[in-house]
Length: 551
Image (cartoon, rainbow, N blue to C red; front, side, top):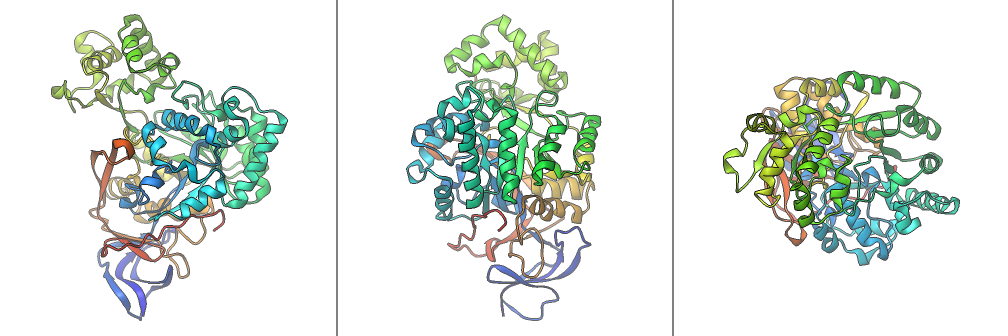
């Protein structure tokens, strides 16, 4: 007698091996048998005509704060994801001194688009300070998913240097304090170390995130600590091509530490197809384990000029970031400033961006919603696209919401990257930019749009990208494969129906903050650590665990 037997499904085991029809038995938190299961289950699940796969693993999330008010980690849990990794891009919540809490809120709001009031009110700041205390606090939550946490460079700098972390290089003593902190965090279970050199990563007050101020010697020293630990991954956001860390530096870090390194992100539009191929040739295959992180969805941001995150790396917007709402309105009313801002945006993003931008939500301009692109409106009016954007926004107190594809709009280019096994699928950013985009639904988009509809990947390839591949890179043990003895993280889905649902706006965050979500279609059942969390009777079971490096 087993707890569960999943009968007659198409077993896609996550390794890339050919699928086959068979059964899977779950006993406790482990897979007890797979193939032909002779025994019976206390619960029998008929999976005929359905795919049975390992639970999906999302290695690039920013759920650090959301875990406290939404331990189900929606919408990820709706899309077959059973394990997430947070603390990416150098940002996290621990360790943190009481006097630095507001600074971290300002950084996360500015860089990751998190709601400031939600951060201030939704995190139980008073219950922890150290990283170990933070992990222990997470373990006390009724988590649905498994969660791993990276040690963030910005977090380390702020703890060791205070406000100076955003202004200057570290002293030798401060650097050694950071190295000691990181060593402790890795010993306590951090899944690795993350950092960012992306110049658009700025606090609400316009200052750059602390990791951007660090000198290269500091970054190398901290990466060496990861190498000395013998465990963990290094995640780096190197910055915009040509202005951030070069490929040679990424290779050097991976070679000298002996640890896997993943860099964020290789996206079409940000890189041409030729540049993408060159970047892959210059990293993987050079004696170092370096993985370019890719996404499968177009990076469709929802932008307002009240909060123009999409333009944060445009030089002229540095002054605007420091202004309040009224100050921004006044600046947008300055015709000369608008012309120069439009010129700089176009120089950085290209003319093609305006051909993807449209009015997505508006009460003042309902006739334009999902209508003509800004490039078409500009041509008709004889002005620039940014001037159109400003005019529409000023008429609605900067509340007009525009949809724009910032990257990954080239389907043929994305297909090439998905088919290149030197790439690691990730970059969902789940938990960040919650009112601007929702890419947490990428597993159902991959399985439905790219696998079934376009045939860019076989079912076995798609499941490998979602399961055993990220597990291997990030050192997630006994997950990502269907085999006897592995943890029973299992998802059952209908290959003919799996898809992401329509985009919705809901207000369920602390302080009434809104977010965008996709529901899922075709995900019929999910088990995490042997407990059924989707597709079965509602229970009070919250089987998620805090994963420590190597476990």
